[in-house]
Length: 451
Ligand SMILES: Nc1ncnc2c1ncn2[C@@H]1O[C@H](COP(=O)(O)OP(=O)(O)OP(=O)(O)O)[C@@H](O)[C@H]1O
Ligand SMILES: [Mg+2]
Image (cartoon, rainbow, N blue to C red; front, side, top):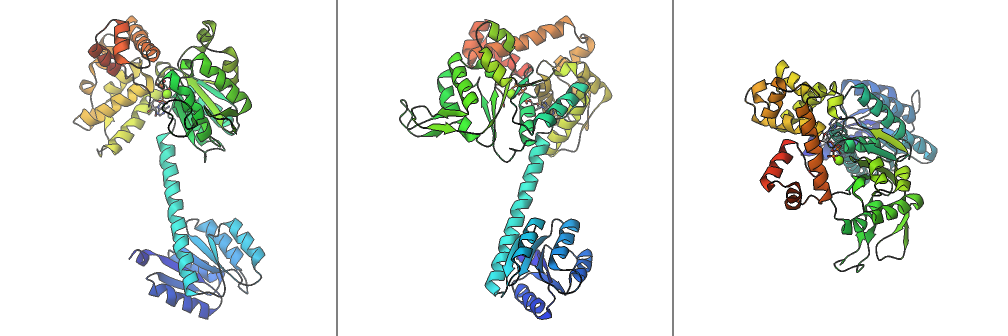
């Protein structure tokens, strides 16, 4: 059935070859048409679509198969071209491969050969189209929005460092986009075909983090019932993203330092040294200078990781980005929720621009998602905004004591959660508040363990 939608153009100077191929293919349900020269083939292609062109590599007269292929690929890059090759055309075939021919069928042609090669070519084209689509979606999902001068600088730095192997340390408050920047570096690098492997050093209990990073052999410790490949190994050929590095124990830091310096390590309980080639990007929302002074972070590791620093300013210091981000998230969430595109009223947007965003871009994203789902009309009005934001309009001015207090509270809670490995009961006790209260504040400031 599917074949009915597939059209094949045959270009061969021998009319017999054309008509017998047409016969075979039409019997299979393909639609076909034919041309006896490159020039004519191109003329026909201009009038009528084709999914696949079967192209004779040697044709007497003006335009040979290679030149025809070049023109087809230039004008119709999505059309798949299969070359028909004969005796002694090896060198041409090489050239055709470079020019983007999908496959080659050698003469003499047999029904079987022709049909299987076409099927394979179609499958290859389908996979390629899927890959392109996936790549486009990924790029869209991880696109960095923002035209503030800070964001422009960051984008420039990303473009400059991406093709290198330079280690990057990304700093910035929670929710400013550190992971997104790390992904952008990976996606624009020469290793983008490799994996981007994030490790959240704050979310993994200290006693497990080494196994997570370096893997372990079967029987390495109680409970190690199988061999496990660690993140450093998974990221071979790609990028490992060490997130929240400020939370690593000194012991782990020593091991990471060695792995970085030598690009070598052993799995826990393993004897073999494993060599990997990966790029390291690290991020933290802690002030590592202070951590070093207090003896919590190794200075030598800091210098190894911090070859190229990227500091992402909090959203309140790049207000220019707020409308752009808000619009971006509106488009995204309306699409995801199958809603017609909504808008923010001028006044509502003004409030968003004034608000201090202690949870930065993540908080803005969450609020827009909620607004898209909850607001009734096509225009989101001031009344639709969460109370906190509305109050900003009436009471708060940028830089007010209230903002500062909220900022401090949000950071302090996050810090405490980090210190307690995100154990809510433990953190609530330490902070001297009820658990429900802690949950409420986490929601309010969009504090979560990371995505
Ligand atoms: N410039 C931006 N453009 C588009 N989306 C962004 C931007 N910055 C952040 N985001 C989005 O905001 C959310 C938070 O970003 P991200 O996870 O990268 O922040 P983070 O700095 O790693 O935060 P945390 O310290 O909490 O881990 C993500 O959904 C991300 O896609
Ligand atoms: Mg993060």
